[in-house]
Image (tube, rainbow, N blue to C red; front, side, top):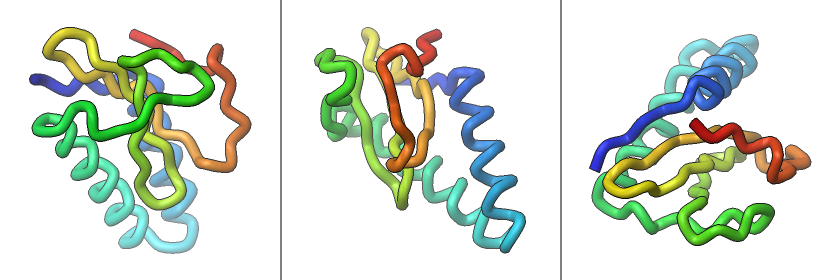
Amino acid sequence: MVIVWSVPARQDIKLIHQYIANDSTRYATRVIQDITNKVEILLVYPRIGMKVPEISEENVREIGMYSYRILYELIGDTIYIHGVIHKRRNFKPEDLHRT
């Protein structure tokens, strides 16, 4: 298995870090590291997440970390991280930018 972060997902991480860093750069770095560590679990347990209810496809899944949803897709031996969004965000299926 291999993990591939999409450009939009990397941008999400950058924006999350910037937002949290307005209050604490140390905490911002910790949150991003925790999200990254959570994603690494997918290498061992790729189906640990639940199906994204807005999409309802078996291979499009999500795991949570703090107040964020980490959206990913399983295709063969590759785990594509499509986005990291806030749980309060009004997410629509067309918001998922697949690579």
